[in-house]
Each structure stands twice: as structure tokens, then as C-alpha cells.
Amino acid sequence: MGGNVRKPFLPLAGIPVLVRTAQVFARVSEIGEKVIVVRREDVPRVGSLLAAYGIRGFRIVAGGERRQDSVFLGVRALSEEVHGVLVHDGVRPLVSEALVRRMAAYAREGRIVVPALPVKDTIKEISGRQVLRTPKREGLVRVQTPQAFPRADLLRALEEAERRGWEVTDEASVFELLGHPVFWTEGEEYNLKLTTPEDLAVAEALLRVLSASEDAEGQGFRVESGAPPAPKGYDAEP
Image (cartoon, rainbow, N blue to C red; front, side, top):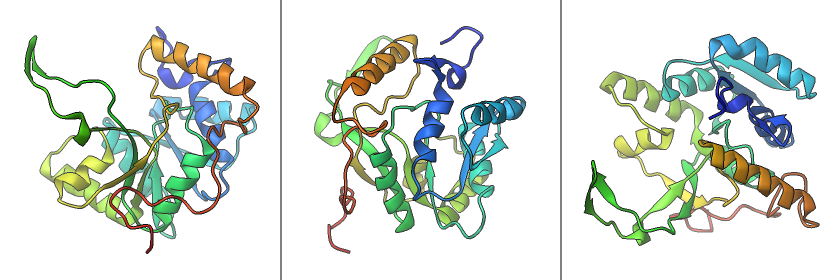
């Protein structure tokens, strides 16, 4: 997307994407241990970047070949006293503190929950250039991160995925394959995953809007207070 510059290091309104993401999590006091997983050759670079922006409290870990390998290494780097974890894409820098706090509450409760938004567009299943079918939008959502898991369960699930030769695009998929219930809660429209140059341009425009908004608090668009809403599929009362 950025030529020789990888997505986490691209400047977003002058600040590297990964740094912006780390800044959000650094402001959430409800999260204790924090780990950033990057390529082995990028460990010193990320450490220097965080220090340059005054970001403390993160452990930087070398990742593996696949996403699930990197997640496993990152989760394993947490102390055994940690019972609930959040897994977040480093290239989702516009996640709000409010969403992170809400997902952290689910993690502390030992729930498996993902943030998601209903699908707006008509989705087509294809094969090559042929359209095969059109699933109903009512049963589809767009999944985001951070995703909440019990730490021990996530490690066991990823080990089982490795044993069975599964490759997944997010960690919740492993639990789905194992038959464990996964629930969803409302995500955020601004919580973009920066994949294309157009995504970066949109994110910069959103940052300008948020900076100009009198209602924005830090990067916390739609800042909420009180107890987190129950994820879809859960009763509001415990």
C-alpha cells in the first residue's frame, strides 16, 4: 500500500499507524499487560517508535509466519495471572477507547465476543467471474477487532488449530470450528482496517472530522459510560 513502507509504519496524519493504535490502548487503564507482535526484524524499530512518542507499558514480541502463529506467541507472552485477553489488528488505528473498554469488560468476564456491524451492501458469493448466489444480509455482519477471549481457552484453541492444520483469518473462527459459541456486540463504523491506499485517505479524512468535532474526546468517538451493553446472544442480566 505504501510502496516499500509496510502498513503499520505508514504515516496517518503524520503519525505511524501502529503508533496511533498503541496510543489508544495506552490510554485504557483497564488493560494491564500489553503486547505488540511484529516481524522479528521490526522489534527494535517498534521499540524506538514507541519511545519516541512517549508510549510505555508495551512488550514487543517477534511474531510467526501466520497471523494465528503471531497471536499465539503474543498471548503466550502474557503472564499466567492474565485471564482475559483482547486481540486487535494493529492497522485499525481509529478504534475508540470506548470500544476497547467495552471489549475489555467482556474479556474479564471470560466471554468470547467480537465487535461487528450489520452488512449494508448486497453480498454475492462468486466462483471466478460467475456469481453463484446471494446470501441474505439479515444473517451477515462485518467483524472487527479487538476480539475478547479467555486466555487459556484461546491458547488451547490455537494449539488445536495447529494440530488439525487449520488456517484462519481471525481467532474467533477457531472457536467456531471447535463448536464453541461466539457472540457479537456492536462495533464502530470508524474502526477501519487499513488495507488499501483509499483506506488511508478515508482514515485521514475521518481524523480531521473527529479533531474538529466538539463532542470528540481524544480518539473516543461515541464515548460511553456505565456498564457495557450485553453482546448479542447474551441476556442483559448475568
